[in-house]
Image: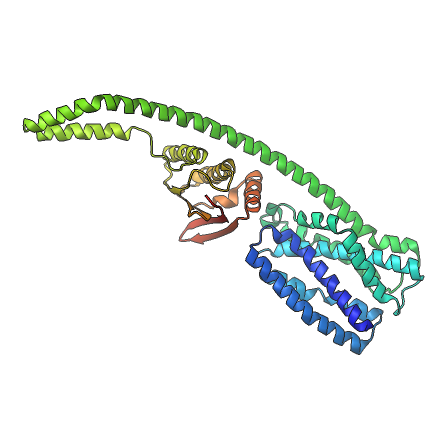
Length: 423
């Protein structure tokens, strides 16, 4: 019975660690990926439980077998996470190191409680260690959940920085520095040594939490300033659009007054056999129509204004810009958020025009249930987004549970976004 209970408690500790490692990635995972991950983890947990029972039955319950379970029991859980959450290797290393440090801290606290209650750690009371660990985990869960949900540093630091692997490996280095000196010690006799055991990881957590909070505050401030600037640009674009539409309306008014005269003139010319002059008159009227407003690209005014203004800039810069936008008047997305996203992407693409050869294709469609956006350009604008634009893209993906994919096709850099949105 003792073997079974210890195996169950050890398995629960491994699952708790897997859950904490899952939290930093959850917001960017699709429901299918989340379901696949937890199906794999729970399936392995049942297998791991049987292995724990067999191992403890043969080796017996003692400090060495206890340490062996926790030194190596995490490996399958981490491998399964890496297999499901792909292309995030540096992030996985960083998250594992941070979770290992936190687990080390909880084990240290649990050991101190065990010594305070029983005076020493023996084979007879070692199973209480896992009980205290899980109690501490549950008591601290609200703080743990909040911390690990916002654990990862900025994407650019782990995606693009030359120091990415140094940053990713730092928590593991701290963990090994705290673990190696005591790996062969089963009992620390003095409270001074016991407190020092988790002082280093705890200090690292506090420093990292402070730095992370300051970094996010600075990022949020930059993002808000960038959003305000873009909103001012869009407001000016709307004003220009309104002026443009007013001018077009005046042209239409003039044409309406002249329409009867034009019909009479065409009728008279045709009646007198002057077909060439009639055709020339018709061509003149068509040219006047071409000077009127472009057809709206979207029924959403902010989206329409944003695309129209960038279409004009594209013509001025000589950038081929194709767009196919089909959106209803209302969708389950704040219009300003979608307009800001388009502005960020188009602005980044236009800045790369100096390298030459830039082309842009924008597709934005809504089928009544889902909204799909495909942004294609030649120069890799997504890789050149500034930090605030990158943060806004990440926030948009998180806020609207967007499935985002990037790819390269025939010289095009493609960003595909898809999210649930009823019109």
